[in-house]
Amino acid sequence: QAFSALDKEDTGFVKAMEFGDVLRSVCQKLTDNQYHYFLRRLRLHLTPNIHWKYFLENFSTFQDEVRR
Picture 1 (cartoon, rainbow, N blue to C red):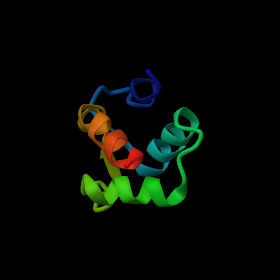
Picture 2 (picture 1 turned 90 degrees about the vertical axis):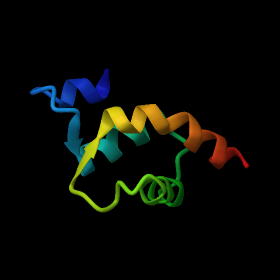
Picture 3 (picture 1 turned 135 degrees about the vertical axis):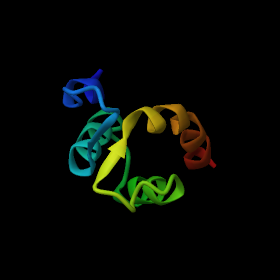
Picture 4 (picture 1 turned 120 degrees about the horizontal axis):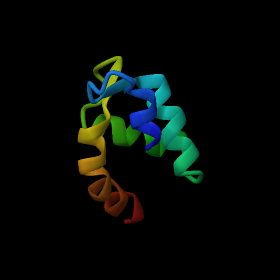
């Protein structure tokens, strides 16, 4: 819901800075290193806008990797 609230035109994208703010508010224990690792893992660090729907589809994979 937080991502869709930022995506007023329903493009599926949000600004990377807004994405980080939302992600950190949801995952309070997410460190900067984990956040940047995740962006690199999904190749999301290469763009100023994040496809949040793609992120949500792949988030469970990231959670599994972080727990290891």
